[in-house]
Image (cartoon, rainbow, N blue to C red):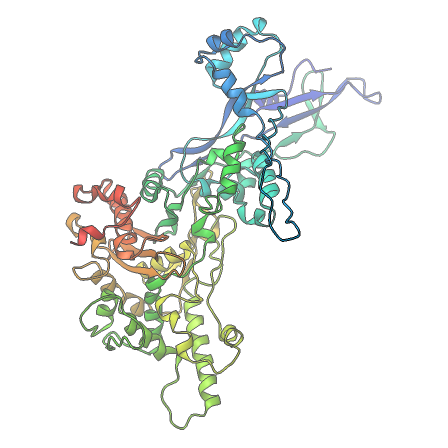
Length: 632
């Protein structure tokens, strides 16, 4: 029984999507009848919008057709009604069918007494037919659903349902956007079934999962006791306060993200672009990527299975967050800053290019100071730089025990300063499954070398960013933000504002400072700018022709299983940085011929909005090769 007049707040039900019901008066009620009412308000999940307010993910109305197994069905007339071409219904039903099972096993052949194998005469058995479960659900558009409802009497047994579902309004940034956990149940079940041990690594709910509680809101249940005139007389049960789902305004630039994804194409690697002064991530590409709707949309199980079974490209991994790898020569910047701080070198320190220590792949003049060493990326120079940090100073009176202890102490001090760059730890980015990377400790080398008497020659690969050291893409971009800011950073993040607050989570407003003085950080910038000049390792990344001064560092990561990996990290404009870009492209060779030009295009696209004609042709070349031919 319902009261004759509901309370005023019940009028909001149509707006908030609530439900109301009232019970009959209780036997112990006073002379005037009272009703125990219950009102439930279901919040609508908040939207994800890019930094310009363009919606990326939202909740929209979806229509589905439930198709039972009919003995007789006029598919021609149905296709005409829906405006589909001939055979469209049959094709959709076929696509919705369950995938075929594994092929039957062939009988094993047994060798005879002499060890000879008999000929394989068994005929291959056909694969079992697909098993079809009914009813089938097909997705409809709103006009298609309206047309079928209008002719519902002519098609008994068919059911059209309208329901709200999470809808992706973009096809980019899949690893970042993620999925609503409840909507991805089919994908998670399939991942657990197919991958077992790798299942938890593959789970990446992205922003949708990380901010799930804020996006979902909280349903409100109110329990007023009303009289016959709709007046409220207290509560008959405890209320649950309604909270609307919050919109999240992301820092992502959707156009820049789409452009960066096109640059990498089907290659394996990542691009991370962020704003150094705020830590806001402008683009975060993990390549190869996929359509974010695949993991939640109905009827796309074959695509989900293909993504899970692609072990070579691993498209489901969010590479910038979870794929930690050696940074290559980009790490020379950190080593140089720490060496300056510890007094092992000065800006004017000169080391010979002694290739008996380590091979130098670049033909260059003598590196008379740190700026030239960074310009030419001289491996022997940075070998001797880190050796000056780790090895104790020559002292004929020192014993072997003192030398070993000093080396352990010096490497420990080096690691402490390097960790202050946000390395070997979780940055705290607002996305799941972030990895901390790795920096070796003295104890690690004691165990790995099986002796405490190891020398610098056994760990020298640290000087060029190789060996045991590993960084993620987010960490590599954050190191550049520290240099751009001359010694501090704000934790990189994807959400710049929650709801109408205009602010991100409080921890994304805090500054973190390194243990290296700002003067020693600033000393790196002239060498990074010189690398863009003629003769520098990153001259193809120069944007001087459009009035942009770039500072950066190339890297080439050695790969024993194939072509080397290309890296680059830098920022622009050099004096007042607005964007930091870190690029890592697998099997792309020298960083200056692939990763550096790729980063330059991303910077120019963001700062200028377009690409100069002389670099426009690079966009397609970078998808499948490098720019080696441009150096001729």
